[in-house]
Image (cartoon, rainbow, N blue to C red):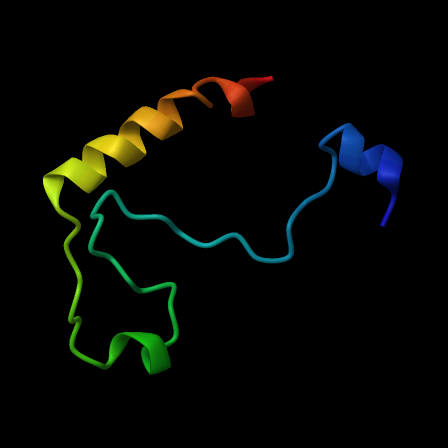
Length: 64
């Protein structure tokens, strides 16, 4: 791997998964991890808000 190409963002990934707008889409995960019934699948609203507030700290980070 060329470090110069990496820094220049000039490397093409070997595999790029197709992403869905559906947050429940698990098609990129092996069935080994998705065949069991979800026990704790939904976060409480308070936990979701806390995560959103933490993620806001990094807003625009990937746009550099």
